[in-house]
Length: 195
Length: 242
Ligand SMILES: [Zn+2]
Image (cartoon, chains in turn yellow, green):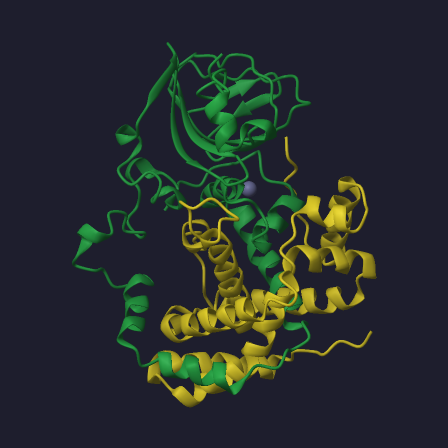
Protein backbone atom coordinates (compact mmCIF):
# COMPACT_ATOMS: atom_id res chain seq x y z
CA UNK A 1 0.00 0.00 0.00
CA UNK A 2 1.31 3.41 -0.87
CA UNK A 3 1.16 5.75 2.09
CA UNK A 4 0.64 9.42 1.90
CA UNK A 5 3.84 10.79 3.36
CA UNK A 6 3.48 13.70 5.72
CA UNK A 7 6.66 15.46 4.87
CA UNK A 8 8.77 17.67 7.04
CA UNK A 9 7.86 20.85 5.16
CA UNK A 10 4.18 20.19 5.74
CA UNK A 11 4.81 19.75 9.46
CA UNK A 12 6.87 22.93 9.46
CA UNK A 13 4.02 24.80 7.82
CA UNK A 14 1.49 23.50 10.35
CA UNK A 15 3.81 24.51 13.14
CA UNK A 16 4.01 28.05 11.75
CA UNK A 17 0.22 28.20 11.59
CA UNK A 18 -0.08 27.23 15.25
CA UNK A 19 2.49 29.87 16.16
CA UNK A 20 0.57 32.49 14.22
CA UNK A 21 -2.59 31.60 16.08
CA UNK A 22 -0.70 31.81 19.38
CA UNK A 23 1.08 35.09 18.80
CA UNK A 24 -1.13 37.02 16.41
CA UNK A 25 -4.54 35.42 17.05
CA UNK A 26 -4.51 34.99 13.29
CA UNK A 27 -7.91 33.74 12.11
CA UNK A 28 -6.65 33.00 8.62
CA UNK A 29 -4.01 30.70 10.08
CA UNK A 30 -6.67 29.10 12.25
CA UNK A 31 -8.84 28.59 9.21
CA UNK A 32 -6.00 26.76 7.46
CA UNK A 33 -5.53 24.55 10.52
CA UNK A 34 -9.24 23.80 10.40
CA UNK A 35 -9.03 22.80 6.74
CA UNK A 36 -6.20 20.42 7.51
CA UNK A 37 -7.29 18.89 10.79
CA UNK A 38 -11.09 18.94 10.89
CA UNK A 39 -11.44 16.11 8.29
CA UNK A 40 -8.96 13.98 10.24
CA UNK A 41 -10.64 14.69 13.57
CA UNK A 42 -14.01 13.75 12.13
CA UNK A 43 -12.51 10.53 10.83
CA UNK A 44 -10.96 9.84 14.24
CA UNK A 45 -14.30 10.20 15.99
CA UNK A 46 -16.14 8.08 13.42
CA UNK A 47 -13.50 5.36 13.79
CA UNK A 48 -14.75 4.81 17.32
CA UNK A 49 -18.43 5.55 16.74
CA UNK A 50 -19.32 4.83 13.11
CA UNK A 51 -22.38 6.80 12.06
CA UNK A 52 -22.30 9.14 15.06
CA UNK A 53 -21.96 12.33 13.03
CA UNK A 54 -23.13 14.69 15.76
CA UNK A 55 -20.58 13.30 18.18
CA UNK A 56 -17.92 13.69 15.48
CA UNK A 57 -18.83 17.34 14.88
CA UNK A 58 -18.71 17.92 18.61
CA UNK A 59 -15.20 16.48 18.82
CA UNK A 60 -14.02 18.54 15.84
CA UNK A 61 -15.41 21.65 17.50
CA UNK A 62 -13.98 20.91 20.92
CA UNK A 63 -10.50 20.13 19.66
CA UNK A 64 -10.29 23.14 17.37
CA UNK A 65 -11.51 25.52 20.05
CA UNK A 66 -8.74 24.06 22.22
CA UNK A 67 -6.27 24.73 19.44
CA UNK A 68 -7.35 28.36 19.44
CA UNK A 69 -7.24 28.67 23.22
CA UNK A 70 -4.14 26.63 23.91
CA UNK A 71 -1.96 27.51 20.93
CA UNK A 72 0.34 29.50 23.24
CA UNK A 73 1.02 26.31 25.21
CA UNK A 74 2.13 24.36 22.15
CA UNK A 75 5.80 23.44 22.41
CA UNK A 76 7.39 22.31 19.16
CA UNK A 77 10.29 20.84 21.12
CA UNK A 78 7.98 18.32 22.74
CA UNK A 79 5.64 17.28 19.98
CA UNK A 80 5.15 17.92 16.30
CA UNK A 81 1.81 19.49 15.31
CA UNK A 82 0.21 16.13 14.44
CA UNK A 83 1.17 14.65 17.79
CA UNK A 84 -0.17 17.68 19.61
CA UNK A 85 -3.50 17.49 17.81
CA UNK A 86 -3.69 13.74 18.32
CA UNK A 87 -3.21 14.10 22.08
CA UNK A 88 -5.83 16.88 22.22
CA UNK A 89 -8.27 14.64 20.32
CA UNK A 90 -7.54 11.66 22.55
CA UNK A 91 -8.13 13.77 25.66
CA UNK A 92 -11.38 15.17 24.28
CA UNK A 93 -12.55 11.64 23.52
CA UNK A 94 -11.77 10.52 27.06
CA UNK A 95 -13.61 13.46 28.57
CA UNK A 96 -16.57 12.94 26.27
CA UNK A 97 -16.80 9.30 27.36
CA UNK A 98 -16.39 10.36 30.96
CA UNK A 99 -19.25 12.85 30.71
CA UNK A 100 -21.38 10.14 29.19
CA UNK A 101 -20.75 7.62 31.89
CA UNK A 102 -18.39 5.31 30.15
CA UNK A 103 -15.56 6.20 32.50
CA UNK A 104 -15.48 7.17 36.14
CA UNK A 105 -16.39 10.75 36.69
CA UNK A 106 -13.94 12.21 39.16
CA UNK A 107 -10.79 12.07 37.09
CA UNK A 108 -10.30 14.10 33.92
CA UNK A 109 -7.93 13.65 31.00
CA UNK A 110 -6.16 16.72 32.31
CA UNK A 111 -5.37 14.94 35.59
CA UNK A 112 -4.08 11.94 33.70
CA UNK A 113 -2.10 13.49 30.87
CA UNK A 114 -1.43 17.18 31.34
CA UNK A 115 0.79 16.93 34.36
CA UNK A 116 3.20 14.38 33.00
CA UNK A 117 6.19 16.56 32.70
CA UNK A 118 9.00 16.04 30.34
CA UNK A 119 11.77 18.16 31.64
CA UNK A 120 13.78 18.57 28.48
CA UNK A 121 12.53 20.46 25.51
CA UNK A 122 15.30 21.93 23.44
CA UNK A 123 16.85 21.69 19.98
CA UNK A 124 18.33 18.28 20.79
CA UNK A 125 14.95 16.87 21.81
CA UNK A 126 13.35 18.36 18.76
CA UNK A 127 15.88 16.66 16.50
CA UNK A 128 15.41 13.38 18.34
CA UNK A 129 11.65 13.77 18.13
CA UNK A 130 11.85 14.36 14.36
CA UNK A 131 14.00 11.28 13.98
CA UNK A 132 11.58 9.11 15.98
CA UNK A 133 8.66 10.50 14.05
CA UNK A 134 10.33 9.57 10.76
CA UNK A 135 11.19 6.14 12.10
CA UNK A 136 7.61 5.53 13.24
CA UNK A 137 6.20 6.79 9.96
CA UNK A 138 8.44 4.57 7.85
CA UNK A 139 7.94 1.61 10.17
CA UNK A 140 4.15 1.81 10.23
CA UNK A 141 4.00 1.61 6.45
CA UNK A 142 5.93 -1.66 6.54
CA UNK A 143 4.08 -3.40 9.35
CA UNK A 144 2.27 -6.65 8.58
CA UNK A 145 -1.42 -5.84 8.11
CA UNK A 146 -2.50 -7.85 11.16
CA UNK A 147 -0.21 -5.84 13.44
CA UNK A 148 -1.21 -2.47 12.00
CA UNK A 149 -4.84 -3.49 12.40
CA UNK A 150 -4.44 -4.12 16.13
CA UNK A 151 -2.69 -0.77 16.59
CA UNK A 152 -5.49 1.01 14.71
CA UNK A 153 -8.15 -0.71 16.82
CA UNK A 154 -6.49 0.51 19.98
CA UNK A 155 -5.37 3.99 18.93
CA UNK A 156 -8.10 5.06 16.54
CA UNK A 157 -11.10 2.98 17.58
CA UNK A 158 -10.23 3.31 21.27
CA UNK A 159 -10.70 -0.40 21.91
CA UNK A 160 -9.26 -2.12 24.93
CA UNK A 161 -7.12 -5.16 24.22
CA UNK A 162 -9.97 -7.38 25.36
CA UNK A 163 -12.38 -5.65 23.00
CA UNK A 164 -9.92 -5.93 20.13
CA UNK A 165 -9.45 -9.63 20.88
CA UNK A 166 -13.19 -10.22 20.95
CA UNK A 167 -13.78 -8.38 17.70
CA UNK A 168 -10.99 -10.12 15.85
CA UNK A 169 -11.86 -13.50 17.40
CA UNK A 170 -8.35 -13.84 18.74
CA UNK A 171 -7.03 -14.88 22.13
CA UNK A 172 -6.03 -11.90 24.28
CA UNK A 173 -2.44 -13.17 24.29
CA UNK A 174 -2.28 -12.90 20.50
CA UNK A 175 -3.43 -9.28 20.59
CA UNK A 176 -0.80 -8.49 23.21
CA UNK A 177 1.94 -10.18 21.23
CA UNK A 178 0.93 -8.40 18.02
CA UNK A 179 1.30 -5.09 19.84
CA UNK A 180 4.71 -6.09 21.12
CA UNK A 181 5.85 -7.31 17.71
CA UNK A 182 4.63 -4.11 16.09
CA UNK A 183 6.53 -2.00 18.62
CA UNK A 184 9.66 -4.05 18.02
CA UNK A 185 9.36 -3.49 14.29
CA UNK A 186 8.97 0.22 14.93
CA UNK A 187 12.15 -0.06 16.98
CA UNK A 188 10.34 1.02 20.10
CA UNK A 189 12.03 -1.07 22.71
CA UNK A 190 10.14 -1.04 25.95
CA UNK A 191 12.00 -2.77 28.67
CA UNK A 192 9.32 -2.75 31.30
CA UNK A 193 7.69 -6.06 31.93
CA UNK A 194 4.94 -6.39 34.45
CA UNK A 195 5.66 -8.29 37.60
CA UNK B 1 10.38 17.87 40.38
CA UNK B 2 10.26 14.33 41.58
CA UNK B 3 13.47 12.86 42.91
CA UNK B 4 15.07 10.66 40.32
CA UNK B 5 15.81 7.16 41.46
CA UNK B 6 15.98 3.73 40.04
CA UNK B 7 12.59 2.27 39.39
CA UNK B 8 12.50 -1.43 38.86
CA UNK B 9 8.88 -2.22 38.15
CA UNK B 10 7.22 -0.67 35.12
CA UNK B 11 4.03 -1.12 33.12
CA UNK B 12 4.44 -3.47 30.16
CA UNK B 13 4.61 -2.35 26.56
CA UNK B 14 1.03 -3.22 25.70
CA UNK B 15 -0.33 -1.43 28.73
CA UNK B 16 1.70 1.69 28.05
CA UNK B 17 0.42 1.55 24.48
CA UNK B 18 -3.18 1.44 25.69
CA UNK B 19 -2.41 4.35 28.01
CA UNK B 20 -1.02 6.40 25.14
CA UNK B 21 -4.10 5.57 23.08
CA UNK B 22 -6.43 6.66 25.87
CA UNK B 23 -7.94 3.17 25.89
CA UNK B 24 -7.37 2.29 29.56
CA UNK B 25 -10.03 2.61 32.25
CA UNK B 26 -9.35 5.83 34.15
CA UNK B 27 -8.65 3.93 37.37
CA UNK B 28 -5.74 2.17 35.64
CA UNK B 29 -4.65 5.26 33.75
CA UNK B 30 -4.37 7.13 37.03
CA UNK B 31 -1.89 4.58 38.42
CA UNK B 32 0.13 4.61 35.18
CA UNK B 33 0.18 8.41 35.18
CA UNK B 34 1.47 8.40 38.77
CA UNK B 35 4.20 5.97 37.76
CA UNK B 36 5.18 8.23 34.85
CA UNK B 37 5.65 11.09 37.26
CA UNK B 38 8.45 9.09 38.88
CA UNK B 39 9.82 7.30 35.84
CA UNK B 40 11.73 9.06 33.10
CA UNK B 41 12.24 5.88 31.11
CA UNK B 42 8.51 5.34 30.72
CA UNK B 43 7.95 9.04 29.98
CA UNK B 44 10.30 8.69 27.03
CA UNK B 45 8.46 5.59 25.86
CA UNK B 46 5.21 7.50 26.10
CA UNK B 47 6.57 10.30 23.93
CA UNK B 48 7.37 7.74 21.26
CA UNK B 49 4.08 5.90 21.64
CA UNK B 50 2.22 9.19 21.22
CA UNK B 51 3.98 9.47 17.88
CA UNK B 52 2.51 6.13 16.87
CA UNK B 53 -0.93 7.53 17.64
CA UNK B 54 -0.05 10.71 15.81
CA UNK B 55 1.00 8.83 12.68
CA UNK B 56 -2.07 6.58 12.68
CA UNK B 57 -4.14 9.74 13.11
CA UNK B 58 -2.48 11.45 10.14
CA UNK B 59 -3.07 8.33 8.03
CA UNK B 60 -6.84 8.36 8.62
CA UNK B 61 -9.03 8.86 5.56
CA UNK B 62 -10.08 12.56 5.72
CA UNK B 63 -13.84 13.05 6.00
CA UNK B 64 -15.65 15.98 4.51
CA UNK B 65 -16.61 18.63 7.03
CA UNK B 66 -19.44 21.08 6.46
CA UNK B 67 -18.99 24.83 6.14
CA UNK B 68 -21.70 25.15 8.72
CA UNK B 69 -19.48 23.51 11.32
CA UNK B 70 -16.56 25.70 10.32
CA UNK B 71 -18.62 28.85 10.65
CA UNK B 72 -19.99 27.72 13.98
CA UNK B 73 -16.47 27.24 15.29
CA UNK B 74 -15.20 30.53 13.86
CA UNK B 75 -18.10 32.32 15.51
CA UNK B 76 -17.19 30.80 18.84
CA UNK B 77 -13.70 32.20 18.76
CA UNK B 78 -15.23 35.59 19.61
CA UNK B 79 -17.30 34.46 22.51
CA UNK B 80 -16.05 35.78 25.81
CA UNK B 81 -16.76 32.46 27.47
CA UNK B 82 -13.97 30.98 25.40
CA UNK B 83 -11.37 33.11 27.10
CA UNK B 84 -12.09 31.11 30.20
CA UNK B 85 -10.30 28.31 28.45
CA UNK B 86 -7.20 30.44 28.46
CA UNK B 87 -7.32 30.90 32.18
CA UNK B 88 -7.96 27.28 32.89
CA UNK B 89 -5.36 26.13 30.47
CA UNK B 90 -2.57 26.73 32.82
CA UNK B 91 -0.19 29.59 33.04
CA UNK B 92 -2.38 32.29 34.52
CA UNK B 93 -3.57 31.89 38.06
CA UNK B 94 -7.13 32.86 38.76
CA UNK B 95 -7.39 35.14 41.78
CA UNK B 96 -10.71 33.57 42.60
CA UNK B 97 -9.21 30.38 43.90
CA UNK B 98 -12.20 29.56 46.09
CA UNK B 99 -13.88 28.12 43.01
CA UNK B 100 -10.98 25.89 42.19
CA UNK B 101 -9.80 24.28 45.39
CA UNK B 102 -7.31 22.15 43.54
CA UNK B 103 -5.14 24.39 41.43
CA UNK B 104 -3.91 21.84 38.92
CA UNK B 105 -0.45 23.33 38.85
CA UNK B 106 0.11 23.47 42.55
CA UNK B 107 2.30 20.65 43.69
CA UNK B 108 0.27 18.32 45.85
CA UNK B 109 1.18 18.24 49.49
CA UNK B 110 3.69 15.59 50.50
CA UNK B 111 5.31 15.37 47.07
CA UNK B 112 2.52 13.28 45.59
CA UNK B 113 2.28 12.80 41.84
CA UNK B 114 0.34 15.69 40.38
CA UNK B 115 -2.25 13.47 38.74
CA UNK B 116 -3.60 13.01 42.28
CA UNK B 117 -4.09 16.73 42.93
CA UNK B 118 -7.80 16.60 42.25
CA UNK B 119 -8.40 13.48 44.30
CA UNK B 120 -6.03 14.39 47.14
CA UNK B 121 -6.23 18.21 47.19
CA UNK B 122 -5.05 18.71 50.76
CA UNK B 123 -2.49 16.00 51.20
CA UNK B 124 -2.63 12.47 52.55
CA UNK B 125 -3.35 13.49 56.14
CA UNK B 126 -6.64 15.12 55.22
CA UNK B 127 -8.05 11.97 53.60
CA UNK B 128 -10.93 10.14 55.28
CA UNK B 129 -8.82 7.27 56.59
CA UNK B 130 -10.50 4.14 57.87
CA UNK B 131 -8.74 1.55 59.95
CA UNK B 132 -8.96 -1.89 58.48
CA UNK B 133 -6.70 -3.53 61.03
CA UNK B 134 -4.27 -2.26 63.68
CA UNK B 135 -1.59 -1.80 61.05
CA UNK B 136 -3.54 -0.89 57.93
CA UNK B 137 -5.72 2.07 56.99
CA UNK B 138 -7.36 2.86 53.70
CA UNK B 139 -8.98 5.90 52.11
CA UNK B 140 -11.16 5.56 49.06
CA UNK B 141 -10.46 8.05 46.28
CA UNK B 142 -12.93 7.09 43.59
CA UNK B 143 -14.84 4.41 41.78
CA UNK B 144 -14.54 3.82 38.08
CA UNK B 145 -17.63 2.88 36.12
CA UNK B 146 -16.15 -0.51 35.38
CA UNK B 147 -16.42 -1.24 39.09
CA UNK B 148 -12.79 -0.59 39.85
CA UNK B 149 -12.03 1.16 43.07
CA UNK B 150 -9.08 3.46 43.62
CA UNK B 151 -7.80 3.69 47.19
CA UNK B 152 -4.78 4.84 49.12
CA UNK B 153 -3.50 2.23 51.55
CA UNK B 154 -1.27 3.01 54.51
CA UNK B 155 0.64 0.21 56.20
CA UNK B 156 2.50 0.78 59.48
CA UNK B 157 6.21 -0.17 59.58
CA UNK B 158 6.44 -3.95 59.51
CA UNK B 159 2.68 -4.26 59.03
CA UNK B 160 1.35 -7.05 56.90
CA UNK B 161 -1.63 -7.08 54.59
CA UNK B 162 -3.95 -10.00 55.18
CA UNK B 163 -3.74 -12.75 52.60
CA UNK B 164 -6.37 -12.02 50.04
CA UNK B 165 -7.58 -13.48 46.83
CA UNK B 166 -7.94 -11.31 43.83
CA UNK B 167 -11.18 -11.53 42.03
CA UNK B 168 -9.96 -9.00 39.50
CA UNK B 169 -6.70 -7.33 38.68
CA UNK B 170 -5.02 -5.24 41.33
CA UNK B 171 -2.56 -2.47 40.52
CA UNK B 172 -0.33 -1.09 43.25
CA UNK B 173 1.93 1.93 43.03
CA UNK B 174 4.24 2.82 45.91
CA UNK B 175 3.89 6.47 46.93
CA UNK B 176 5.98 6.43 50.12
CA UNK B 177 8.16 3.92 51.92
CA UNK B 178 8.52 0.42 50.60
CA UNK B 179 7.01 -3.02 50.91
CA UNK B 180 7.90 -6.52 49.89
CA UNK B 181 6.27 -9.81 49.12
CA UNK B 182 7.65 -13.18 48.14
CA UNK B 183 8.40 -11.87 44.64
CA UNK B 184 10.38 -8.73 45.44
CA UNK B 185 10.92 -5.42 47.19
CA UNK B 186 9.04 -2.38 45.93
CA UNK B 187 10.06 1.23 46.39
CA UNK B 188 8.58 4.60 45.55
CA UNK B 189 7.39 4.74 41.97
CA UNK B 190 7.38 0.99 41.43
CA UNK B 191 4.15 -0.31 39.94
CA UNK B 192 2.97 -3.87 40.40
CA UNK B 193 0.22 -5.79 38.66
CA UNK B 194 -1.44 -8.78 40.28
CA UNK B 195 -4.27 -10.92 39.08
CA UNK B 196 -6.24 -13.72 40.57
CA UNK B 197 -3.70 -16.32 39.55
CA UNK B 198 -0.91 -14.77 41.57
CA UNK B 199 -0.31 -16.78 44.69
CA UNK B 200 2.55 -14.94 46.37
CA UNK B 201 0.60 -11.96 47.52
CA UNK B 202 1.13 -11.13 51.14
CA UNK B 203 2.67 -7.67 51.17
CA UNK B 204 4.62 -6.53 54.21
CA UNK B 205 5.81 -2.97 54.81
CA UNK B 206 9.48 -2.37 55.53
CA UNK B 207 10.41 -2.13 59.22
CA UNK B 208 11.81 1.38 59.07
CA UNK B 209 8.95 3.38 57.64
CA UNK B 210 5.27 3.57 56.96
CA UNK B 211 4.34 2.49 53.44
CA UNK B 212 1.73 4.36 51.42
CA UNK B 213 0.42 2.94 48.15
CA UNK B 214 -2.06 3.92 45.49
CA UNK B 215 -4.14 0.95 44.41
CA UNK B 216 -6.73 0.22 41.81
CA UNK B 217 -8.74 -2.96 42.23
CA UNK B 218 -11.06 -4.39 39.68
CA UNK B 219 -14.17 -5.36 41.56
CA UNK B 220 -15.75 -8.75 41.09
CA UNK B 221 -18.31 -8.31 38.38
CA UNK B 222 -21.31 -9.50 40.40
CA UNK B 223 -20.69 -6.84 43.01
CA UNK B 224 -20.44 -3.80 40.82
CA UNK B 225 -24.09 -2.84 40.47
CA UNK B 226 -25.85 -0.53 42.84
CA UNK B 227 -28.42 -3.16 43.72
CA UNK B 228 -25.80 -5.77 44.34
CA UNK B 229 -24.28 -3.44 46.91
CA UNK B 230 -27.63 -2.80 48.45
CA UNK B 231 -28.57 -6.43 48.77
CA UNK B 232 -25.29 -8.00 49.58
CA UNK B 233 -24.48 -7.26 53.21
CA UNK B 234 -21.35 -9.39 53.11
CA UNK B 235 -19.35 -7.16 50.83
CA UNK B 236 -16.27 -6.10 52.65
CA UNK B 237 -15.77 -2.42 52.95
CA UNK B 238 -12.34 -2.73 51.49
CA UNK B 239 -10.53 -5.28 49.47
CA UNK B 240 -7.74 -5.21 52.05
CA UNK B 241 -9.64 -5.96 55.22
CA UNK B 242 -9.36 -9.59 56.08
ZN1 LIG C 1 8.61 3.12 34.23
